[in-house]
Length: 252
Image 1: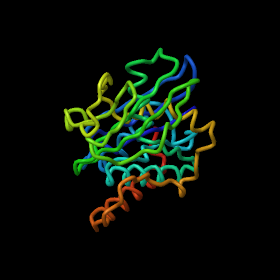
Image 2: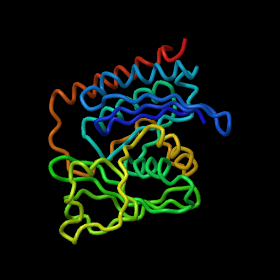
Image 3: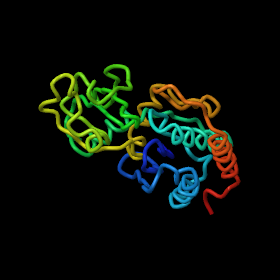
């Protein structure tokens, strides 16, 4: 498959293009500063990687983006750009669960040869809370082990043998403290990378989860506070920039 994937849900901007399948498959990857810089950097990164890969937007099979949970601004940025690029190129969108991408990144980097495992993925949600989700890897595919949740670090009641995410430095010593702490769990620092999303994409595609651009939505767990005027303007600008990228600038 020819795929574009990107995530702006954390403090890191992650972008990747995958071309082909099997032994001849290739990837082009960018990792840089996210957060406030992501909205300005994302589209140039996308266009640059597509050019390196020799692909135009309409030659993609799908566009994958980190749909959440994560930073409100980051999720809106990724969704707006995915919609703008996909709509103009008439390409479907794959909405990737960022917690599942964390689980996949940890599995691939730490225990790639293990045929089955369970991973609890944890992402810092700020405001003294974190996003948590548990996933099962079996038969070469991921499945949810239960609904994702927003909780305090102390409220993590149980965890799988492998914990993955970006909360260990922030909430060191507090994970599961209300329940006697977590013993024996291996902790792996991992983020929802675009390369993890490329690996997840074929299974999502086979499951029929690709949607038209206008149906793509961020996945919020925490109730949203009111969107500011500045945030609305950033979203509009991101969508306009993404739409203008369909003018042929993606490749020479």
